[in-house]
Amino acid sequence: MKTINSDIQVHWEKIAPLLSIRTAREYEIAVERMNELLDEIGTNERHPLYSLLDVLGTLIYFYEEDNFPIAKRSYE
Image 1 (cartoon, rainbow, N blue to C red):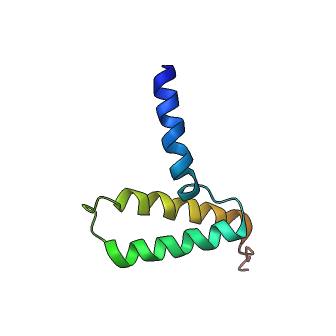
Image 2: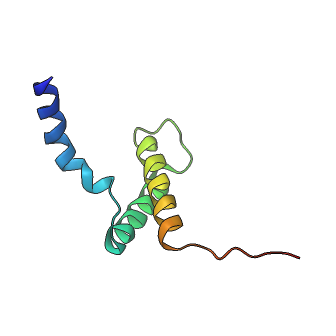
């Protein structure tokens, strides 16, 4: 198991910046990256990077929910 964890750690250090959004700057970079992926991939679900686009979109969504909440309005 230790070998697997070591392998994961080596790869994680390289991909973690792609999958972490903790600051406004990281958010901006993630949005730019998502837009570049959208330009290349579009809606092609068979593209090798489609799952990255999907994950990145989810991370951006939750960052926005936490940091840019839309005021709830009551319609009476």
